[in-house]
Length: 193
Image 1 (cartoon, rainbow, N blue to C red):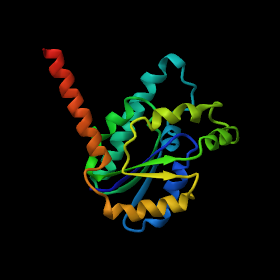
Image 2 (tube, rainbow, N blue to C red):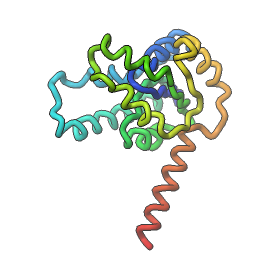
Image 3 (tube, helix red, strand yellow):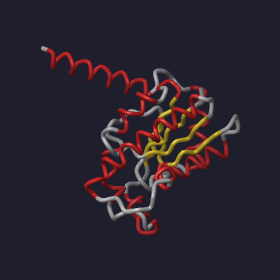
Image 4 (spheres, one colour):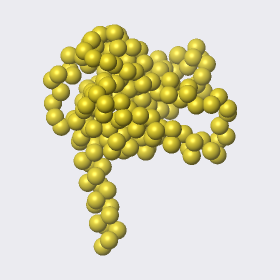
């Protein structure tokens, strides 16, 4: 089973920069970077109508999670940069990804930095990253947190590399899966009574 380094942060937080650094410094085995923007870029360039946005994007996101799982299953190590801004995204991940093989890292940065970078990117509406912040980090449970406001992407990548062999258990994904499954069972039992 391959390792999965899962970077979660808002648009413009530095996830992709950290992922690139990880590809440079992790030298043991084949490593893939599955970027949120790269996966979306494979979709047709046609404008999506607002009323079809969720029904179109959710299957794409679920397919992405299953692609990550498939690569890990054959032994590839993967660095994922993701934005867990939709309520279904985080619950889906630990059901398809092996929770014990995922290092879940939160990528935080100065709140004003992503907003400052938005005009230069040209592919995000103003305020997009600020809107995502509370949604992305609402769960508050990571194996490791990085702050791109106080550390460079290279320093964050080195901390992740150093942390990998010493991860305590259970992992954040394992804890989340247990909570999610327990809540689901409690809900079903309550519905029966």
